Image (spheres, rainbow, N blue to C red):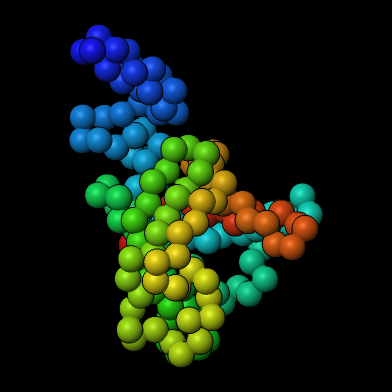
Amino acid sequence: MRSKLIKVLISNLIAFSGFVYADGLMSAERDIVGVWRFDRIILDGEERPPFNPDLIIEFNFREDGSDTLLWYRNNEKGFCERDGRYAFDGEFLRDKVTWVNPQNRFDCSRDPDMQLGRETSTPTVLKNGELYMTFQVDDQSLTYIWTRTLR
């Protein structure tokens, strides 16, 4: 029984797509920790600046598996902010919204990312020190490119 359990654990570790550190974080999760700012997009295979240059979006991933998503526009009052719990395996970012700021702008509730309990699994990779998150919008692929920032 014990040897069978050990074999199962070893095979699961081998199948797992990342090295696990003593603190329980996978190497991919450790790499994503920090504050990331939305920088540009890829649409129709072409890299472009954001549609609205006044839109600031930041993701803060912490070592304890919690995250904060915050967005606002430079020329408008208010913001949208929420917290979540994430897991990142180097290919997918899984996230669940655990708190929504009660001080959010009135229209934040229309944003699916600002709805309590929402769970997502988004194709996400780290490439050349940047974070690439790919979404399907209708029949098109849209990739958000994020750069690490110091705050």
